[in-house]
Image 1 (cartoon, one colour):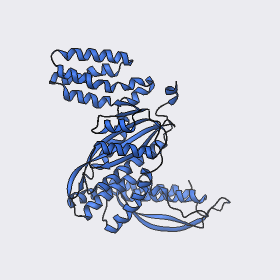
Image 2: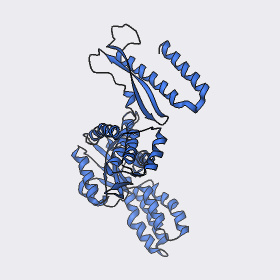
Image 3: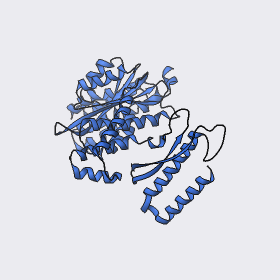
Image 4: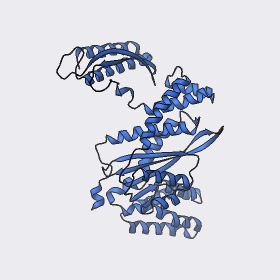
Length: 393
């Protein structure tokens, strides 16, 4: 970094020391402008006024731009270039990590422009520091973002030995009525031993036909080689999974299965202890040992609570399929936590700002944007999620 950059940082730090946290928008803007200038220098392969054989093009002033951030609406001077042999310079830092925030703001903007829950929309806009939005701005931003997200949803896939699928519900307006909308999503562990967000589907139901269309769309995009599927016992999923992925082994999420057991327990005392009792089954060293533990558990309830014993006998074995995998894989694949924590919780965090989406399309836009950013983050992971040589052995 040259002396000009050092001086700029000193000025920013002095301003921060003087004003504290009362003017973070200006501090953020100055730091962002510095990052943009450094990015331009990297693009040109030369610092300001530097003459080198490697230089490609030259600096060509600045253009003003306003961006909406959690620190408020910030005015920036975006560096321009000229004379480059390839294409005009545009800072990647203006796009990186902005999809989900843009999707949230577009959903709120649609609410605002259509007059739906105006007070709520204005409150969310203030939270993002947005001063104003016009229908033209919203339309233009929506088109750009939708094209980008559609390309991601339709990108080709490949071999995915393990698959984790899940669903959650959000509220959206449809024909003037607030409806529950199912958001289906899937992640796969590919031949590169890393996680990949495969896609999502947003519709008004979680019926079998929705699940089947979703799974078939993944296959149509090239998903193949699925050997093991993890999910909760979602409505409509079982029949769809059998029809589309009939050769794959199905593992019912042990975490949700334990929650279901608590729900079916006949009294408070059993509710308080059934989770601990099931851990002896889940943590067994082998399928045979797990079955012995389950038989023992059923026997303790058979005489006084036969209905509950029957429920355990009919449902808990669906959580034991993971014992068909190598021991090193079981912890990762015995629950749907691989999709619940990184995806469902992040979706909940982002959708909570909107609460009720103005339409199904805005819900799909935001959900896709969140998943794209998670998928891009996973692409940079250096550590394998699953080691396939263990499976091959």
